[in-house]
Image (cartoon, rainbow, N blue to C red; front, side):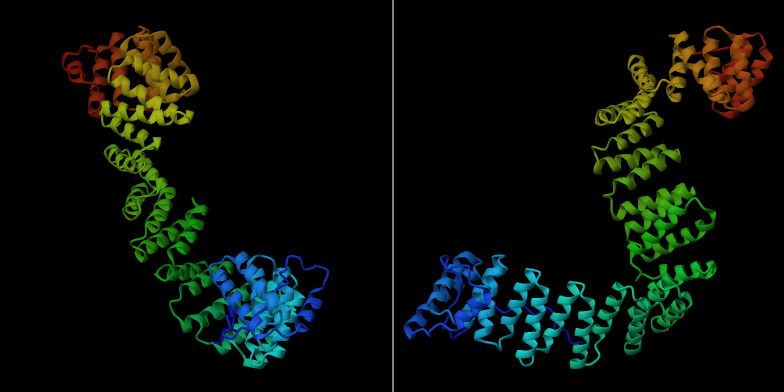
Length: 587
Protein backbone atom coordinates (compact mmCIF):
# COMPACT_ATOMS: atom_id res chain seq x y z
CA UNK A 1 0.00 0.00 0.00
CA UNK A 2 1.28 3.43 -0.90
CA UNK A 3 1.86 5.63 2.12
CA UNK A 4 2.99 9.15 1.43
CA UNK A 5 2.23 10.56 4.86
CA UNK A 6 4.49 12.58 7.06
CA UNK A 7 7.16 13.38 4.51
CA UNK A 8 9.74 15.29 6.52
CA UNK A 9 10.78 18.79 5.60
CA UNK A 10 14.27 18.84 4.12
CA UNK A 11 16.87 21.04 5.73
CA UNK A 12 17.86 21.92 2.17
CA UNK A 13 21.51 22.90 2.36
CA UNK A 14 22.22 23.69 -1.32
CA UNK A 15 25.67 23.22 -2.80
CA UNK A 16 25.51 26.32 -4.95
CA UNK A 17 24.55 29.16 -2.66
CA UNK A 18 24.05 32.67 -3.72
CA UNK A 19 22.42 33.07 -0.41
CA UNK A 20 20.40 35.72 1.26
CA UNK A 21 17.35 36.58 3.23
CA UNK A 22 15.73 37.67 6.40
CA UNK A 23 13.34 40.24 7.46
CA UNK A 24 15.74 40.04 10.28
CA UNK A 25 17.27 43.42 10.45
CA UNK A 26 16.22 44.46 13.87
CA UNK A 27 15.80 48.02 12.61
CA UNK A 28 13.56 47.02 9.66
CA UNK A 29 10.15 48.59 9.92
CA UNK A 30 7.20 46.33 10.72
CA UNK A 31 4.76 48.36 8.68
CA UNK A 32 5.24 46.38 5.48
CA UNK A 33 2.80 43.61 4.82
CA UNK A 34 4.05 40.07 4.25
CA UNK A 35 3.17 40.34 0.57
CA UNK A 36 5.01 43.65 0.21
CA UNK A 37 8.10 42.12 1.81
CA UNK A 38 8.03 39.16 -0.55
CA UNK A 39 7.60 41.49 -3.55
CA UNK A 40 10.42 43.74 -2.41
CA UNK A 41 12.74 40.78 -2.11
CA UNK A 42 12.08 39.63 -5.68
CA UNK A 43 12.71 43.13 -7.00
CA UNK A 44 16.06 43.63 -5.20
CA UNK A 45 19.16 44.21 -7.43
CA UNK A 46 21.37 41.20 -8.15
CA UNK A 47 24.48 40.89 -5.89
CA UNK A 48 28.02 40.94 -7.23
CA UNK A 49 30.29 37.88 -7.26
CA UNK A 50 32.13 39.17 -4.17
CA UNK A 51 28.80 39.74 -2.33
CA UNK A 52 27.68 36.22 -3.19
CA UNK A 53 30.88 34.78 -1.67
CA UNK A 54 30.42 36.83 1.51
CA UNK A 55 26.81 35.71 1.79
CA UNK A 56 27.75 32.09 1.21
CA UNK A 57 30.36 32.21 4.00
CA UNK A 58 27.87 33.76 6.41
CA UNK A 59 25.29 31.15 5.45
CA UNK A 60 27.68 28.25 6.10
CA UNK A 61 28.62 29.72 9.49
CA UNK A 62 24.92 30.00 10.29
CA UNK A 63 24.37 26.37 9.30
CA UNK A 64 26.97 25.27 11.85
CA UNK A 65 24.95 26.91 14.63
CA UNK A 66 21.70 25.65 13.14
CA UNK A 67 22.95 22.06 13.30
CA UNK A 68 24.00 22.68 16.92
CA UNK A 69 20.41 23.89 17.56
CA UNK A 70 21.65 27.35 18.53
CA UNK A 71 18.92 28.94 16.46
CA UNK A 72 19.34 32.51 17.73
CA UNK A 73 22.99 32.64 16.68
CA UNK A 74 22.16 30.90 13.42
CA UNK A 75 19.45 33.48 12.69
CA UNK A 76 21.84 36.39 13.25
CA UNK A 77 24.27 34.97 10.68
CA UNK A 78 21.48 34.17 8.23
CA UNK A 79 20.22 37.74 8.62
CA UNK A 80 23.65 39.13 7.81
CA UNK A 81 23.77 36.96 4.70
CA UNK A 82 20.31 38.17 3.80
CA UNK A 83 21.41 41.84 3.80
CA UNK A 84 23.82 40.89 1.01
CA UNK A 85 21.68 38.45 -1.04
CA UNK A 86 18.01 38.96 -0.14
CA UNK A 87 16.75 37.22 -3.28
CA UNK A 88 18.31 33.82 -2.61
CA UNK A 89 15.51 31.25 -2.30
CA UNK A 90 17.46 28.78 -0.14
CA UNK A 91 18.43 31.51 2.33
CA UNK A 92 14.84 32.73 2.59
CA UNK A 93 13.75 29.17 3.23
CA UNK A 94 16.37 28.68 5.95
CA UNK A 95 15.45 31.88 7.77
CA UNK A 96 11.79 30.85 7.71
CA UNK A 97 12.69 27.43 9.05
CA UNK A 98 14.80 28.98 11.82
CA UNK A 99 11.91 31.23 12.87
CA UNK A 100 9.72 28.13 13.16
CA UNK A 101 12.28 26.51 15.43
CA UNK A 102 12.17 29.68 17.51
CA UNK A 103 8.37 29.32 17.81
CA UNK A 104 7.76 32.44 15.76
CA UNK A 105 5.71 31.32 12.75
CA UNK A 106 4.44 34.84 12.03
CA UNK A 107 7.97 36.07 11.23
CA UNK A 108 8.58 32.97 9.14
CA UNK A 109 5.74 33.71 6.69
CA UNK A 110 7.34 36.44 4.49
CA UNK A 111 10.51 34.43 4.05
CA UNK A 112 8.65 31.25 3.19
CA UNK A 113 6.61 33.19 0.61
CA UNK A 114 9.75 34.85 -0.76
CA UNK A 115 11.40 31.45 -1.19
CA UNK A 116 8.40 30.28 -3.26
CA UNK A 117 8.33 33.49 -5.26
CA UNK A 118 11.97 32.97 -6.18
CA UNK A 119 11.75 29.23 -6.81
CA UNK A 120 8.18 28.03 -7.37
CA UNK A 121 9.01 24.40 -8.20
CA UNK A 122 10.51 23.42 -4.81
CA UNK A 123 8.00 21.33 -2.84
CA UNK A 124 9.75 21.90 0.49
CA UNK A 125 9.12 25.63 0.31
CA UNK A 126 5.37 25.10 0.06
CA UNK A 127 5.47 22.59 2.92
CA UNK A 128 7.25 25.10 5.12
CA UNK A 129 4.71 27.76 4.28
CA UNK A 130 1.87 25.35 5.11
CA UNK A 131 3.53 24.58 8.43
CA UNK A 132 3.87 28.27 9.28
CA UNK A 133 0.19 28.82 8.59
CA UNK A 134 -0.85 25.70 10.48
CA UNK A 135 1.07 26.74 13.59
CA UNK A 136 -0.97 29.96 13.57
CA UNK A 137 -4.16 27.98 13.07
CA UNK A 138 -4.57 29.52 9.61
CA UNK A 139 -5.98 26.34 8.16
CA UNK A 140 -7.50 27.84 5.02
CA UNK A 141 -4.16 29.43 4.13
CA UNK A 142 -2.29 26.20 4.92
CA UNK A 143 -4.64 24.26 2.66
CA UNK A 144 -4.05 26.81 -0.09
CA UNK A 145 -0.30 26.29 0.28
CA UNK A 146 -0.79 22.57 -0.31
CA UNK A 147 -3.03 23.23 -3.31
CA UNK A 148 -0.45 25.62 -4.77
CA UNK A 149 2.16 22.94 -4.29
CA UNK A 150 0.01 20.40 -6.12
CA UNK A 151 -0.65 22.84 -8.96
CA UNK A 152 2.90 24.16 -9.41
CA UNK A 153 5.20 21.24 -8.64
CA UNK A 154 5.03 18.31 -11.08
CA UNK A 155 4.83 14.85 -9.45
CA UNK A 156 3.68 16.22 -6.10
CA UNK A 157 0.43 14.26 -5.93
CA UNK A 158 1.69 12.43 -2.86
CA UNK A 159 1.08 15.58 -0.83
CA UNK A 160 -2.65 15.10 -1.21
CA UNK A 161 -2.31 12.86 1.84
CA UNK A 162 -0.83 15.76 3.81
CA UNK A 163 -3.72 17.97 2.74
CA UNK A 164 -6.25 15.32 3.79
CA UNK A 165 -4.56 14.98 7.18
CA UNK A 166 -4.65 18.73 7.63
CA UNK A 167 -8.41 18.80 7.04
CA UNK A 168 -8.90 15.78 9.28
CA UNK A 169 -6.96 17.37 12.14
CA UNK A 170 -9.37 20.31 12.03
CA UNK A 171 -12.49 18.10 11.73
CA UNK A 172 -13.17 19.48 8.26
CA UNK A 173 -14.56 16.12 7.24
CA UNK A 174 -16.23 17.13 3.98
CA UNK A 175 -12.99 18.69 2.71
CA UNK A 176 -11.10 15.57 3.76
CA UNK A 177 -13.56 13.35 1.88
CA UNK A 178 -13.19 15.49 -1.27
CA UNK A 179 -9.43 15.17 -0.97
CA UNK A 180 -9.74 11.39 -0.72
CA UNK A 181 -11.66 11.51 -4.01
CA UNK A 182 -8.73 13.36 -5.59
CA UNK A 183 -6.33 10.77 -4.21
CA UNK A 184 -8.45 7.94 -5.58
CA UNK A 185 -8.50 9.52 -9.04
CA UNK A 186 -4.72 9.65 -8.93
CA UNK A 187 -3.89 6.26 -7.40
CA UNK A 188 -7.04 4.22 -7.73
CA UNK A 189 -8.84 2.48 -4.81
CA UNK A 190 -6.62 2.24 -1.73
CA UNK A 191 -7.31 0.27 1.43
CA UNK A 192 -6.27 3.14 3.68
CA UNK A 193 -8.73 5.47 1.97
CA UNK A 194 -11.64 3.19 2.83
CA UNK A 195 -10.45 2.95 6.43
CA UNK A 196 -10.12 6.73 6.68
CA UNK A 197 -13.53 7.28 5.11
CA UNK A 198 -15.08 4.82 7.51
CA UNK A 199 -13.53 6.63 10.48
CA UNK A 200 -14.89 9.95 9.21
CA UNK A 201 -18.39 8.53 8.77
CA UNK A 202 -18.28 7.18 12.30
CA UNK A 203 -17.24 10.57 13.65
CA UNK A 204 -20.15 12.04 11.70
CA UNK A 205 -22.40 9.33 13.22
CA UNK A 206 -23.26 8.15 9.73
CA UNK A 207 -23.33 4.44 10.51
CA UNK A 208 -24.98 3.47 7.21
CA UNK A 209 -22.09 4.85 5.14
CA UNK A 210 -19.55 3.45 7.61
CA UNK A 211 -21.08 0.00 7.09
CA UNK A 212 -20.90 0.45 3.31
CA UNK A 213 -17.19 1.22 3.58
CA UNK A 214 -16.77 -1.80 5.84
CA UNK A 215 -18.39 -4.05 3.24
CA UNK A 216 -16.10 -2.60 0.56
CA UNK A 217 -13.06 -3.33 2.73
CA UNK A 218 -14.08 -6.96 3.12
CA UNK A 219 -14.83 -7.28 -0.59
CA UNK A 220 -11.36 -6.03 -1.52
CA UNK A 221 -9.56 -7.69 1.43
CA UNK A 222 -11.43 -10.97 2.05
CA UNK A 223 -8.69 -12.48 4.24
CA UNK A 224 -8.25 -9.49 6.57
CA UNK A 225 -9.95 -10.59 9.82
CA UNK A 226 -9.96 -7.15 11.45
CA UNK A 227 -12.35 -5.79 8.83
CA UNK A 228 -14.89 -8.49 9.67
CA UNK A 229 -14.62 -7.67 13.36
CA UNK A 230 -14.97 -3.94 12.71
CA UNK A 231 -18.01 -4.47 10.49
CA UNK A 232 -19.63 -6.76 13.07
CA UNK A 233 -19.21 -4.03 15.68
CA UNK A 234 -20.88 -1.55 13.36
CA UNK A 235 -23.81 -3.88 12.74
CA UNK A 236 -24.18 -4.37 16.47
CA UNK A 237 -24.00 -0.61 17.10
CA UNK A 238 -26.76 -0.10 14.55
CA UNK A 239 -28.89 -2.74 16.30
CA UNK A 240 -28.51 -5.37 13.61
CA UNK A 241 -27.22 -8.29 15.73
CA UNK A 242 -28.15 -10.97 13.18
CA UNK A 243 -25.98 -9.33 10.52
CA UNK A 244 -23.22 -8.98 13.11
CA UNK A 245 -23.40 -12.70 13.90
CA UNK A 246 -23.32 -13.64 10.20
CA UNK A 247 -20.28 -11.41 9.68
CA UNK A 248 -18.46 -13.05 12.60
CA UNK A 249 -19.28 -16.50 11.31
CA UNK A 250 -17.65 -15.51 8.02
CA UNK A 251 -14.68 -14.24 9.99
CA UNK A 252 -14.27 -17.63 11.65
CA UNK A 253 -14.23 -19.25 8.21
CA UNK A 254 -11.16 -17.13 7.53
CA UNK A 255 -9.56 -17.66 10.96
CA UNK A 256 -11.26 -20.43 12.88
CA UNK A 257 -9.70 -19.82 16.28
CA UNK A 258 -9.82 -16.03 16.34
CA UNK A 259 -10.57 -15.28 20.03
CA UNK A 260 -12.01 -11.82 19.41
CA UNK A 261 -14.60 -13.18 17.01
CA UNK A 262 -15.57 -15.77 19.63
CA UNK A 263 -15.80 -13.06 22.30
CA UNK A 264 -18.08 -10.92 20.16
CA UNK A 265 -20.24 -13.94 19.32
CA UNK A 266 -20.48 -14.67 23.03
CA UNK A 267 -21.65 -11.14 23.77
CA UNK A 268 -24.15 -11.10 20.90
CA UNK A 269 -25.65 -14.45 21.90
CA UNK A 270 -25.92 -13.29 25.49
CA UNK A 271 -27.81 -10.20 24.30
CA UNK A 272 -30.21 -12.47 22.39
CA UNK A 273 -30.68 -14.73 25.42
CA UNK A 274 -28.78 -17.70 23.97
CA UNK A 275 -26.81 -18.27 27.18
CA UNK A 276 -25.58 -21.76 26.32
CA UNK A 277 -24.09 -20.59 23.03
CA UNK A 278 -22.71 -17.49 24.76
CA UNK A 279 -20.85 -19.65 27.30
CA UNK A 280 -19.55 -21.93 24.54
CA UNK A 281 -18.12 -19.00 22.59
CA UNK A 282 -16.48 -17.31 25.58
CA UNK A 283 -14.81 -20.59 26.56
CA UNK A 284 -13.44 -20.95 23.03
CA UNK A 285 -12.03 -17.43 23.32
CA UNK A 286 -10.43 -18.07 26.70
CA UNK A 287 -8.84 -21.30 25.52
CA UNK A 288 -6.75 -19.28 23.07
CA UNK A 289 -3.33 -18.01 24.19
CA UNK A 290 -3.75 -15.31 21.53
CA UNK A 291 -6.34 -13.60 23.69
CA UNK A 292 -4.12 -11.47 25.90
CA UNK A 293 -4.09 -11.93 29.65
CA UNK A 294 -5.28 -8.37 30.34
CA UNK A 295 -8.43 -8.87 28.27
CA UNK A 296 -9.15 -12.13 30.09
CA UNK A 297 -8.60 -10.54 33.48
CA UNK A 298 -10.89 -7.63 32.55
CA UNK A 299 -13.68 -10.07 31.62
CA UNK A 300 -13.15 -12.10 34.79
CA UNK A 301 -13.34 -8.92 36.86
CA UNK A 302 -16.76 -8.28 35.29
CA UNK A 303 -17.80 -11.73 36.53
CA UNK A 304 -16.41 -10.96 39.99
CA UNK A 305 -18.60 -7.87 40.16
CA UNK A 306 -21.65 -10.12 39.66
CA UNK A 307 -20.75 -12.42 42.57
CA UNK A 308 -22.07 -13.95 44.68
CA UNK A 309 -24.44 -15.26 42.02
CA UNK A 310 -24.88 -19.02 41.53
CA UNK A 311 -25.92 -18.43 37.91
CA UNK A 312 -22.44 -17.23 36.91
CA UNK A 313 -20.19 -19.02 39.41
CA UNK A 314 -19.69 -22.11 37.26
CA UNK A 315 -18.72 -20.34 34.04
CA UNK A 316 -16.53 -17.86 35.96
CA UNK A 317 -14.55 -20.68 37.56
CA UNK A 318 -14.17 -22.45 34.21
CA UNK A 319 -12.86 -19.29 32.60
CA UNK A 320 -10.42 -18.79 35.45
CA UNK A 321 -9.13 -22.35 34.94
CA UNK A 322 -8.78 -21.77 31.18
CA UNK A 323 -6.86 -18.56 31.88
CA UNK A 324 -4.39 -20.37 34.10
CA UNK A 325 -3.98 -23.13 31.52
CA UNK A 326 -3.40 -20.66 28.68
CA UNK A 327 -1.04 -18.43 30.68
CA UNK A 328 0.72 -20.79 33.13
CA UNK A 329 3.46 -18.28 33.97
CA UNK A 330 1.31 -15.17 34.41
CA UNK A 331 0.83 -13.99 38.00
CA UNK A 332 -2.37 -12.19 36.97
CA UNK A 333 -4.00 -15.47 35.91
CA UNK A 334 -3.59 -17.01 39.38
CA UNK A 335 -4.41 -13.78 41.20
CA UNK A 336 -7.77 -13.29 39.46
CA UNK A 337 -8.59 -16.97 39.99
CA UNK A 338 -7.85 -16.45 43.69
CA UNK A 339 -10.17 -13.45 43.79
CA UNK A 340 -13.01 -15.47 42.26
CA UNK A 341 -12.50 -18.44 44.55
CA UNK A 342 -12.30 -16.25 47.65
CA UNK A 343 -15.71 -14.71 46.96
CA UNK A 344 -17.27 -18.08 46.13
CA UNK A 345 -15.88 -19.57 49.35
CA UNK A 346 -13.21 -21.89 47.93
CA UNK A 347 -10.67 -20.53 50.39
CA UNK A 348 -8.05 -23.27 50.20
CA UNK A 349 -7.92 -23.14 46.40
CA UNK A 350 -7.87 -19.36 46.49
CA UNK A 351 -4.96 -19.27 48.93
CA UNK A 352 -3.02 -21.81 46.84
CA UNK A 353 -3.54 -19.80 43.65
CA UNK A 354 -2.40 -16.62 45.36
CA UNK A 355 0.73 -18.49 46.40
CA UNK A 356 1.31 -19.48 42.76
CA UNK A 357 0.85 -15.85 41.75
CA UNK A 358 3.64 -14.66 44.05
CA UNK A 359 6.04 -17.26 42.67
CA UNK A 360 5.89 -15.35 39.39
CA UNK A 361 5.55 -11.83 40.81
CA UNK A 362 5.98 -11.29 44.53
CA UNK A 363 5.74 -7.50 44.41
CA UNK A 364 2.00 -7.11 45.04
CA UNK A 365 1.13 -6.19 48.61
CA UNK A 366 -2.58 -6.99 48.21
CA UNK A 367 -1.92 -10.57 47.10
CA UNK A 368 0.24 -11.23 50.16
CA UNK A 369 -2.45 -9.65 52.32
CA UNK A 370 -5.01 -12.06 50.86
CA UNK A 371 -2.68 -15.00 51.52
CA UNK A 372 -2.25 -14.30 55.23
CA UNK A 373 -5.92 -13.40 55.64
CA UNK A 374 -6.93 -16.77 54.18
CA UNK A 375 -4.34 -18.55 56.35
CA UNK A 376 -6.06 -17.01 59.35
CA UNK A 377 -9.57 -17.85 58.11
CA UNK A 378 -8.46 -21.42 57.44
CA UNK A 379 -7.04 -21.60 60.99
CA UNK A 380 -3.66 -22.67 59.61
CA UNK A 381 -1.44 -20.90 62.10
CA UNK A 382 1.78 -22.56 60.91
CA UNK A 383 1.12 -21.33 57.38
CA UNK A 384 0.19 -17.92 58.78
CA UNK A 385 3.57 -17.61 60.48
CA UNK A 386 5.46 -18.81 57.39
CA UNK A 387 3.69 -16.61 54.87
CA UNK A 388 3.66 -13.50 57.05
CA UNK A 389 7.42 -13.86 57.47
CA UNK A 390 7.83 -14.11 53.68
CA UNK A 391 5.69 -11.02 53.27
CA UNK A 392 7.72 -9.13 55.87
CA UNK A 393 10.91 -9.75 53.90
CA UNK A 394 9.31 -7.79 51.06
CA UNK A 395 7.25 -5.29 53.07
CA UNK A 396 8.99 -4.84 56.44
CA UNK A 397 7.19 -1.57 57.16
CA UNK A 398 3.66 -2.89 56.62
CA UNK A 399 2.14 -3.23 60.06
CA UNK A 400 -0.59 -5.61 58.90
CA UNK A 401 1.97 -8.37 58.28
CA UNK A 402 3.43 -7.88 61.77
CA UNK A 403 -0.11 -8.27 63.10
CA UNK A 404 -0.68 -11.57 61.31
CA UNK A 405 2.80 -12.78 62.21
CA UNK A 406 2.21 -12.02 65.89
CA UNK A 407 -1.24 -13.61 65.75
CA UNK A 408 0.19 -16.75 64.17
CA UNK A 409 2.85 -17.05 66.85
CA UNK A 410 0.18 -16.44 69.51
CA UNK A 411 -1.90 -19.33 68.23
CA UNK A 412 1.22 -21.50 68.00
CA UNK A 413 1.94 -20.58 71.64
CA UNK A 414 5.23 -18.89 70.76
CA UNK A 415 4.34 -16.10 73.15
CA UNK A 416 7.69 -14.31 73.25
CA UNK A 417 7.82 -14.10 69.44
CA UNK A 418 4.18 -13.11 69.38
CA UNK A 419 4.49 -10.07 71.66
CA UNK A 420 7.72 -9.01 69.98
CA UNK A 421 6.08 -8.95 66.56
CA UNK A 422 2.92 -7.31 67.89
CA UNK A 423 4.80 -4.57 69.72
CA UNK A 424 6.84 -3.76 66.60
CA UNK A 425 3.75 -3.65 64.42
CA UNK A 426 1.92 -1.52 66.98
CA UNK A 427 4.67 1.11 66.74
CA UNK A 428 4.26 1.15 62.94
CA UNK A 429 0.50 1.65 63.29
CA UNK A 430 0.73 4.71 65.53
CA UNK A 431 -1.25 6.76 63.00
CA UNK A 432 -3.87 4.05 62.49
CA UNK A 433 -5.95 3.92 65.69
CA UNK A 434 -8.19 1.08 64.49
CA UNK A 435 -5.22 -1.15 63.69
CA UNK A 436 -3.42 -0.14 66.90
CA UNK A 437 -6.51 -1.32 68.80
CA UNK A 438 -6.25 -4.72 67.09
CA UNK A 439 -2.63 -4.97 68.17
CA UNK A 440 -3.57 -4.18 71.78
CA UNK A 441 -6.25 -6.87 71.75
CA UNK A 442 -3.68 -9.49 70.78
CA UNK A 443 -1.06 -8.07 73.12
CA UNK A 444 -3.46 -8.42 76.03
CA UNK A 445 -3.76 -12.15 75.27
CA UNK A 446 -0.02 -12.56 74.63
CA UNK A 447 1.13 -10.84 77.81
CA UNK A 448 -1.45 -12.75 79.85
CA UNK A 449 0.00 -16.03 78.55
CA UNK A 450 3.45 -14.79 79.60
CA UNK A 451 1.98 -13.94 83.03
CA UNK A 452 2.96 -10.33 82.51
CA UNK A 453 -0.39 -9.25 83.87
CA UNK A 454 0.47 -5.56 84.19
CA UNK A 455 1.13 -5.19 80.47
CA UNK A 456 -1.79 -7.44 79.64
CA UNK A 457 -4.17 -5.26 81.63
CA UNK A 458 -2.71 -2.08 80.10
CA UNK A 459 -3.26 -3.44 76.60
CA UNK A 460 -6.87 -4.41 77.38
CA UNK A 461 -7.58 -1.07 79.02
CA UNK A 462 -6.20 0.73 75.95
CA UNK A 463 -8.73 -1.10 73.80
CA UNK A 464 -11.66 -0.34 76.11
CA UNK A 465 -10.66 3.33 76.16
CA UNK A 466 -11.41 3.37 72.43
CA UNK A 467 -14.16 0.75 72.21
CA UNK A 468 -15.94 0.25 75.53
CA UNK A 469 -18.03 -2.64 74.17
CA UNK A 470 -15.24 -4.59 72.48
CA UNK A 471 -16.40 -8.20 72.73
CA UNK A 472 -12.99 -9.84 72.56
CA UNK A 473 -11.56 -7.75 75.39
CA UNK A 474 -14.68 -7.83 77.60
CA UNK A 475 -14.66 -11.62 77.38
CA UNK A 476 -10.93 -12.37 77.69
CA UNK A 477 -10.11 -9.65 80.20
CA UNK A 478 -12.94 -10.59 82.56
CA UNK A 479 -12.19 -14.32 82.23
CA UNK A 480 -8.47 -13.92 82.87
CA UNK A 481 -9.18 -11.72 85.90
CA UNK A 482 -11.46 -14.47 87.26
CA UNK A 483 -8.72 -17.06 86.79
CA UNK A 484 -6.36 -14.77 88.73
CA UNK A 485 -9.00 -13.98 91.38
CA UNK A 486 -8.29 -10.30 90.84
CA UNK A 487 -10.62 -7.32 90.32
CA UNK A 488 -13.58 -9.70 90.33
CA UNK A 489 -16.15 -6.91 90.61
CA UNK A 490 -14.57 -5.23 87.59
CA UNK A 491 -14.63 -8.57 85.79
CA UNK A 492 -18.30 -9.03 86.73
CA UNK A 493 -19.27 -5.66 85.26
CA UNK A 494 -17.49 -6.41 82.01
CA UNK A 495 -18.90 -9.92 81.67
CA UNK A 496 -22.40 -8.75 82.61
CA UNK A 497 -22.31 -6.08 79.92
CA UNK A 498 -21.27 -8.70 77.38
CA UNK A 499 -24.10 -11.08 78.30
CA UNK A 500 -26.65 -8.27 78.14
CA UNK A 501 -25.53 -7.51 74.60
CA UNK A 502 -25.24 -11.17 73.52
CA UNK A 503 -27.60 -13.24 75.69
CA UNK A 504 -27.37 -16.41 73.56
CA UNK A 505 -23.60 -16.63 73.10
CA UNK A 506 -22.44 -19.73 75.05
CA UNK A 507 -18.84 -18.50 75.43
CA UNK A 508 -19.96 -15.21 76.95
CA UNK A 509 -22.48 -16.98 79.22
CA UNK A 510 -19.69 -19.28 80.40
CA UNK A 511 -17.37 -16.34 81.14
CA UNK A 512 -20.01 -14.51 83.19
CA UNK A 513 -20.89 -17.72 85.02
CA UNK A 514 -17.25 -18.32 85.86
CA UNK A 515 -16.84 -14.82 87.27
CA UNK A 516 -19.90 -15.46 89.45
CA UNK A 517 -18.42 -18.80 90.45
CA UNK A 518 -15.23 -17.09 91.58
CA UNK A 519 -17.34 -14.62 93.55
CA UNK A 520 -19.08 -17.55 95.27
CA UNK A 521 -22.42 -16.99 93.56
CA UNK A 522 -22.90 -20.64 92.59
CA UNK A 523 -26.63 -20.39 91.98
CA UNK A 524 -26.08 -17.46 89.63
CA UNK A 525 -23.25 -19.35 87.93
CA UNK A 526 -25.50 -22.42 87.52
CA UNK A 527 -28.24 -20.34 85.93
CA UNK A 528 -26.00 -19.02 83.18
CA UNK A 529 -24.13 -22.29 82.65
CA UNK A 530 -27.41 -24.13 82.17
CA UNK A 531 -28.18 -21.70 79.37
CA UNK A 532 -24.69 -22.23 77.92
CA UNK A 533 -24.75 -26.05 77.91
CA UNK A 534 -28.19 -25.98 76.32
CA UNK A 535 -26.60 -24.23 73.35
CA UNK A 536 -23.08 -25.68 73.28
CA UNK A 537 -21.28 -28.89 74.19
CA UNK A 538 -17.89 -27.16 74.37
CA UNK A 539 -15.61 -29.08 76.79
CA UNK A 540 -14.73 -26.03 78.90
CA UNK A 541 -18.39 -25.02 79.29
CA UNK A 542 -19.42 -28.59 80.25
CA UNK A 543 -16.54 -28.91 82.72
CA UNK A 544 -17.37 -25.58 84.33
CA UNK A 545 -20.97 -26.70 84.72
CA UNK A 546 -19.70 -29.80 86.51
CA UNK A 547 -17.58 -27.65 88.83
CA UNK A 548 -20.61 -25.52 89.74
CA UNK A 549 -22.74 -28.61 90.38
CA UNK A 550 -20.02 -29.96 92.65
CA UNK A 551 -20.04 -26.72 94.65
CA UNK A 552 -23.80 -27.05 94.96
CA UNK A 553 -23.43 -30.55 96.40
CA UNK A 554 -24.51 -32.42 93.28
CA UNK A 555 -21.45 -34.66 93.20
CA UNK A 556 -22.67 -37.41 90.87
CA UNK A 557 -24.05 -34.93 88.35
CA UNK A 558 -20.75 -33.09 88.50
CA UNK A 559 -18.74 -36.23 87.73
CA UNK A 560 -21.10 -37.06 84.86
CA UNK A 561 -20.44 -33.67 83.26
CA UNK A 562 -16.70 -34.00 83.82
CA UNK A 563 -16.81 -37.28 81.94
CA UNK A 564 -18.68 -35.60 79.07
CA UNK A 565 -16.05 -32.88 78.99
CA UNK A 566 -13.23 -35.43 78.84
CA UNK A 567 -14.81 -37.12 75.84
CA UNK A 568 -14.44 -33.83 73.95
CA UNK A 569 -10.68 -33.98 74.56
CA UNK A 570 -10.37 -30.25 75.33
CA UNK A 571 -10.92 -30.18 79.08
CA UNK A 572 -8.54 -28.90 81.77
CA UNK A 573 -5.41 -30.66 82.98
CA UNK A 574 -7.25 -31.69 86.15
CA UNK A 575 -10.09 -33.52 84.44
CA UNK A 576 -8.74 -37.04 85.04
CA UNK A 577 -8.13 -36.42 88.76
CA UNK A 578 -11.59 -34.89 89.13
CA UNK A 579 -13.22 -37.95 87.64
CA UNK A 580 -11.03 -40.49 89.40
CA UNK A 581 -11.13 -38.94 92.86
CA UNK A 582 -14.56 -37.32 92.48
CA UNK A 583 -13.10 -34.16 93.90
CA UNK A 584 -12.79 -30.61 92.63
CA UNK A 585 -9.35 -29.39 91.61
CA UNK A 586 -8.62 -25.91 90.32
CA UNK A 587 -5.54 -24.01 89.19
